Amino acid sequence: MQPYLAPSTYIDFDHPTVAAQAAALAEGLQRAPLALVKRCFEFVRDEIQHSGDAMRNPVTCKASDVLQHRTGYCYAKSHLLAALLRANGIPTGLCYQRLSVGDQGAPYCLHGLNAVYLPKFGWYRVDARGNKPGVNAQFTPPQEALAFTLQDPMERDLPEIWAEPLPVVVQALLAHDDVGELSRKLPDVPLLAASQTRDSRHT
Image (cartoon, rainbow, N blue to C red; front, top):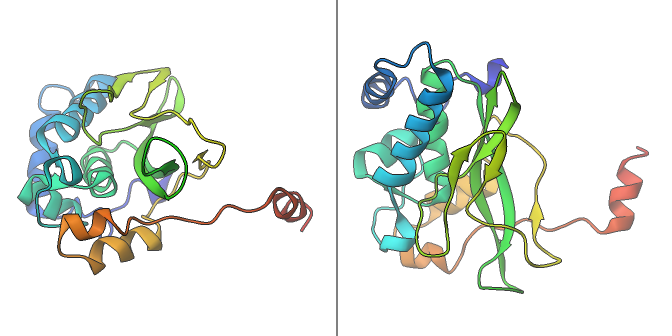
């Protein structure tokens, strides 16, 4: 679990403001890990604006920058949630969905969320991107209540739980200064053909 507990460049819970926020959120809940996870999740979901919804600059990536500016795309918000939880000793990873940018069909983009290790339930996904009409993400273990469900044959729940953000995500966030510009160039990954997936299982 060590990689999912460690600070890093973008999950920088060793930054003083992130550490202080993590401690404030944990107050009174050190012996109640589920309540602590819920409090941190709801803080990031509700108190940090989704940059695309609010059309609010700057484009953030580091957890400390997300906290400072109180805004971030889903990816950046997942970095902050990971930082707050790791600071409190709760193993937290990053995971992704591939979703249609519109209601259905191309173009597609990655959507960032988190997986938290809960002793009673194992890895459990939460999505702190921020609720709005049609989006109602909650913390309700063991049932997931994510922001989005798959509706298109080319959409995917990517199965990996990453300790660090995907390079394509970091590159996209660092390459754009304006949220409107980033919204037109959201990161994506190609899907392997079924034959390639079968071949990879035998190599």
